[in-house]
Length: 122
Image 1 (tube, one colour):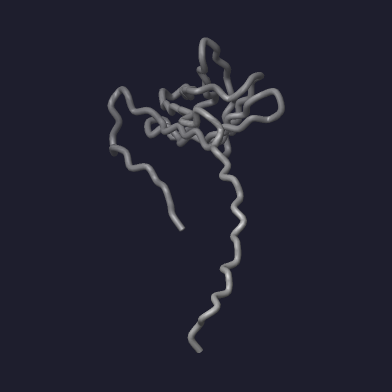
Image 2: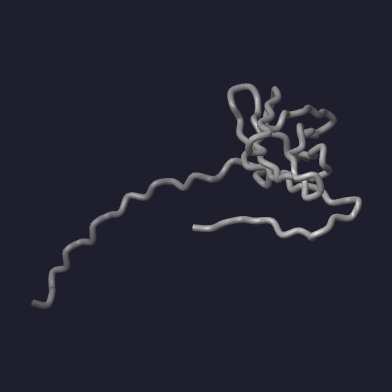
């Protein structure tokens, strides 16, 4: 088991953003789907109402669930190499795909049984 929590300052300066997390990025048919979650703003103690996703030269917005801070974004096309999620409370998360090519699948090897020796110890 593991847990994750945020430790922030007791009092915020003018720039005290929330924390944005990209939980998953997956292809779904002819589109890609990004899911994430964010924390409440330490300053206002409320969730941002939306997250803006920037990918390539495009961007889009995802509404944030005010009950738990989750959000989902989908757009046509394949998964971009990099995308950035920025909340209205200035939190930011960057996703980078490190997969550049498909993994190599090893060929199966058939093991040959050892030949029986003529002279064996008993």
